Image (cartoon, rainbow, N blue to C red; front, side, top):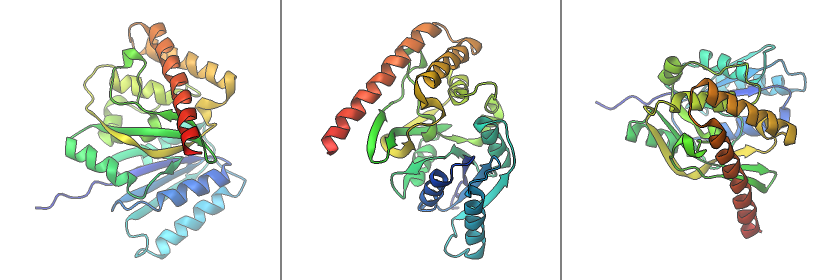
Length: 265
C-alpha cells in the first residue's frame, strides 16, 4: 500500500510587512511538494498586507486545479509579538510537519528536499544551511552540520522542519523572550539529546537580513542575553562558554558570507 503523503504546514507571521510578505507567499507557491498548508497569522496590518492575504486566499480557493497542492487558512488580529503569532499558527495548523516560513526558498523543490530527508531518515526534525541576504548581497552564511549545543552549535531555525508531535511533547514558543524564543525552543528540544535531527548540506532558505534577531547592536545584545537565560533556564551546563563560542561562530558566518560574496562578483 502506498504511504500517504504527509502534510506540511508553513506558518507565516506578518505585521505591516507588505513587500516582504508578498515575496514570501509568491516563493511558497512555487513549491512542488504535493500537500502544503499555508497558515498565515497577521497581527492586524494596515499597510495593504491584509489585501494581499485575502487576494491569495481567493485565488487558491477559486482555482483548485492550479493550486491543487495548496490549502490556506489565515487570521488577522492583534497579537503579542512574533512568537505569539507563531504559536497561534501552530495551534491552527493541521499538518503533520511544521515549518515557520517568513523568508524565501532558493528552489522549487526545497520543501520536497526537507520532507524526503525527514521521512527517509525517520527523523523528528530536519534542517539545512541558510543564507541571510540584503537584496543580492550575502551578509551571513549559516553552515551548521549536526553538532553539539555545548560547542555553540545550533541549527538555523528558519530551516527547521519539525514533526508536530515534537511541539506537543515540548511545548510552544515562550513569549517572554522578545527576540530569542526560537533559540530557547531549540535548546529545549535538543538539550536532552534524544531528538533525531537530520541535516541537508545545502542552502534551501534565503532569509531577509535585518529581522528581530539581527537588528543592530542593541538587538544583538538583547538576543545574547536571552540566549544566556535560555541556557540557564534549561539547566545547560557552562552557559557562558557556550555563548562565547556562539558569538565566535556567528562572526565566522559573516566572514564566510563576505568571502563567498566576493567570489560571486
